[in-house]
Length: 160
Picture: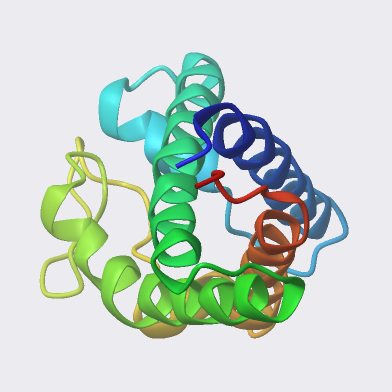
C-alpha cells in the first residue's frame, strides 16, 4: 500500500466530497450537513458541532480512503471507473443502511418511532436521507462518486 498517496488523495477526495455536500446545502439542493450531523453526536453546542463534525468527517474520509486503496491494491489496478464504482457503492450503503441507523446512535436525534423531546430535536434522515430533501440522494451519490473518482484517478499503486 502506498501510504502517503492514500493520505494525500483521501484528504483531497474528502475535501471535494465535503465541498460538494456543503455547496449543495447552500444552494438549497439538500438540507443535510454531514459535519453538523457528526458534530452534534459529540456536542450539543451547534457552533462547535460544525468544527468537531468537520474534523470527524475528515478522519472518516481518510479511513475510507484506506478501504478504497485496499481494493485497488487487491486488484492491482486503479482508474477513475473503479474508483467511481466504489464511490457509488459507498453512497448506496450510506443512504440505505447508515442514514436510517443514525437515530439509534445519535443522542440528539429524534427516532422515527418516538417524537421530539427536550434533548432530541434533530430530524432523522430516513431512508435515502429523503427527510432532508428530494435531491439529497442525488447529491450524496454525486459527492461520493467524485470522491471515488479522485482516489481511483490519482492513487499510485505500491511498487513490487
